[in-house]
Amino acid sequence: MMENRYEQAKKVLECILDREWNFRGDAPDELFRQFKKRYPQDSDEELRELIDFSGSRYFLRKGIPEIIAKGNHQVVLSLGNGYVGKTRVKIETSAHYASSTLFVYEPGLVETIKVLRELHFDVPEHHYVELEQTPEGFKVSDDGLSFVIAADLTENRKYLIEEVNEPHFESLINGAELKQQLIDASRTLQEVYDHKNPLYRITVNDHVTGEGPQEAFRRMFFTQIDHVTNKGKLVLGDLDHVFLFRNP
Image (cartoon, rainbow, N blue to C red):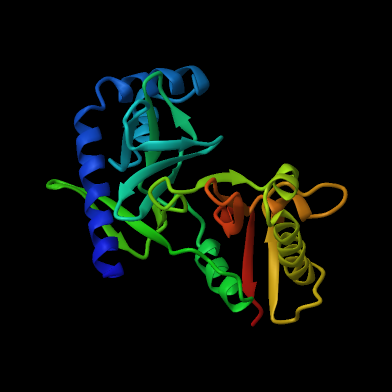
């Protein structure tokens, strides 16, 4: 059943990308003008190639109902069937988000999921998939680095998903338990960072402060909040902050 729902989510993503390609309007021309200002030394042909990425660009209108969240560099789409789609967006026009089907995510994230599970973290369903634009339309296939299809942590908006923050530990019924879970999780990752776990190694991508990588570890987690019971659950959701590898 889960496999069928996942396959359906891939089809939904294909339909969204096909529809949005037909509504891209003058977004490619607007991007060209942006790049022309940014790289005036480059020829028009070079800039067109940069924008097109050999025909692998796709566009999402900013107001479409499938967009349920927008972070600094990531857009989250509802795909139904218990799934969301996530893509990194580094450039945009006045009306569109623009991304590429080529290597949007790093290979290290695939290994990171495997290691997190070996470290006994509960990692929600998470697929890195391939996007390809064909004459018949966009195709989504397994085992790529173009896009993420992941479990919908809101469970069809039953739960509120927020970045972990101190008020959760005070306001939620099980706040003290959540805080201890975050401490324990951070300790497990810190042991890898400090080379105290010889099986693995870790690279921290951002949010390293003078006090160490604890902020990066915290940002990997969200609080899944049930408003009916006023209880929360610590869930992994943002895996981009670290890379974890098995030592040879």
